[in-house]
Length: 294
Image 1: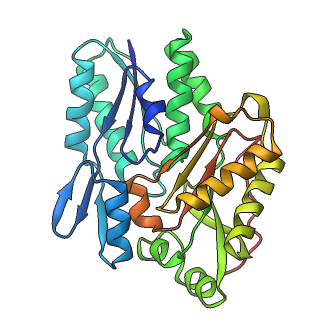
Image 2: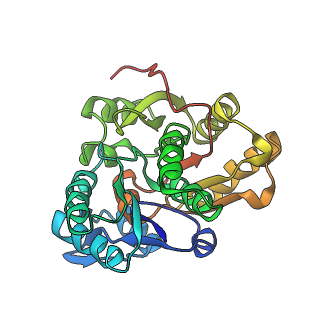
């Protein structure tokens, strides 16, 4: 059996995840008020962020990654691992090193750890389509080929309500964060396909305008709307997520049952902050020209 593995930086609606088989998840530790959590409730975390509490995460180390893979490999399973983007965390590099040790211990197995350059619901969509492809009968080699294609065709467009959260984690520059805050502009961010880092590509005045602009981008980038699956993740702003979903339903021929809304998980959500929205779908390519300056 080929296991698809990932970590808790991936976000996927619970009903979708429960439909998948032979998918295993590494736990990234989230720290809140001097307590470590493996499964921190998102709603509770966003409440604490709004109160001004600091939430941090710790990268999975090589030792824990090795143990995680070993528990699967010793049962005779092959593994394709899809971690958080290396541009956002050291978890990916630690997994790659651990996977090399697994290959040495189990020379007859097939193991692959890949820098996904994905995060949150984008990583969730990568896991979802990889699991589906495997269940359709794809070989290990066919899955790797498909993975390389998918990585460059999953959109990562994000609306951030407060850039200061991303600045504190080093995800955007201080100049970008201050400029966006002072001008009261809603920054539109994307996860770069090459670096795996978050970049601001446009600033839009007003919340609803930023949502509509993101859906406009979807019209430009999307492929095969009748066959799309759409993930919308929100940082404790369900009404905005529902408004975004309605925009998608009204403008495209995507079946309503293929549009899924859920919370940001705590691993990514603690860095993006309350009010964040992400719209994920299959696109022509992930490349985005940056049109704004610091």
